[in-house]
Amino acid sequence: MTYKAQILLGRITKVYSHDGTVNVRLEKRFIEKIPLMESVFLEVEGKPVPFLIKSSDYPGGDILRLSFDGYESTERMSEFIGCQVFLTQSDIPENSNYPDYSFIDGYLICLPDKTKIGTIKEIISNPGQILAFVITPDHKEIYIPLHEDLILSSDKKKKILFMDLPEGLIDLN
Figure 1 (tube, one colour):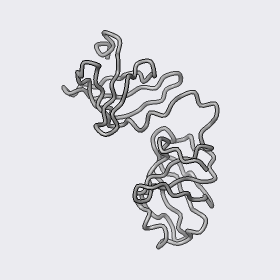
Figure 2: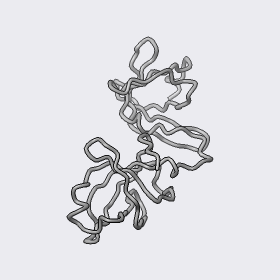
Figure 3: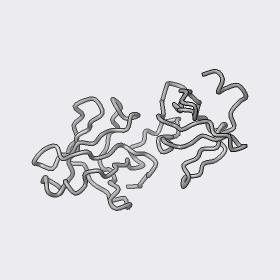
């Protein structure tokens, strides 16, 4: 199992039943698109811990129910409420042509001259295009295509994404 920290499946929100099954609130990109998984990593105190999946159930919406081998009680699983759940490298479809941009949710988009465009509120995966839904400093809603040719760099500590956007792109929104 290889840990892939950028592929966030969701977060454990509560223990669902007495057998240790938990509810995982899915990231938007996985709603209705649950990958086949044998294991996941939970981020416990900032460190990835592997868990083998005993069973999974997708009742619909943004909730996935998971139970893990060796953790068959409410008491054992309650300590993991709030933990992030990450996919293993093998869970990622091999034919996936799109990079995962979910980790930049909440980042500020800036131009090379440090002009602030706005804050990313959501990543939208459309067929053939990934978009950032952005709220500008003057509270306008705009969409910016996320393409590797437009992204210059990112600062993970400051949560800033530097992009070189074509002239007039922001005015189209």
